[in-house]
Length: 140
Image 1 (tube, rainbow, N blue to C red):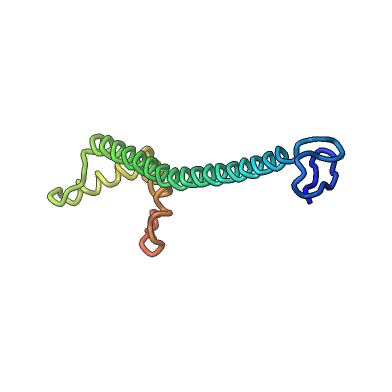
Image 2: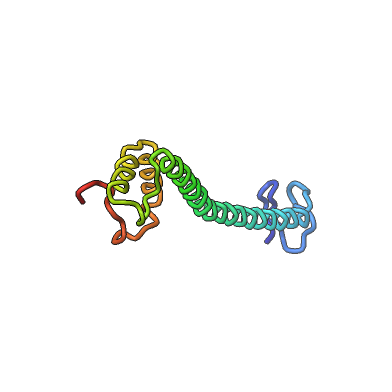
């Protein structure tokens, strides 16, 4: 038995209009079907939106890691190059031992180089396996 969505009246089968209020029952059935299709389409669109959002989030983290690793590596290389110029470096095997010691001592005192190395090491620490990380403190 079709139930009128306007007034709630139970109507006999194959009745084109509600016996109580006169609203067309076939239009009500069509509106219900249209509403159901609309709700299903909305749910599908929401699932697609969630999937796209998840893909963007999953792609953003590696891009962030790559960008900042590249930045910190570039910064470290630039600061190292500048420190080597100031300290008459870089250290080479052909240098006398006293000169290697002087260059290493000068490089160890350079605060910008130390900070750039620490920043790079701290940022890339999560990417390195735990067994291969080294301590940067003297005496360890």
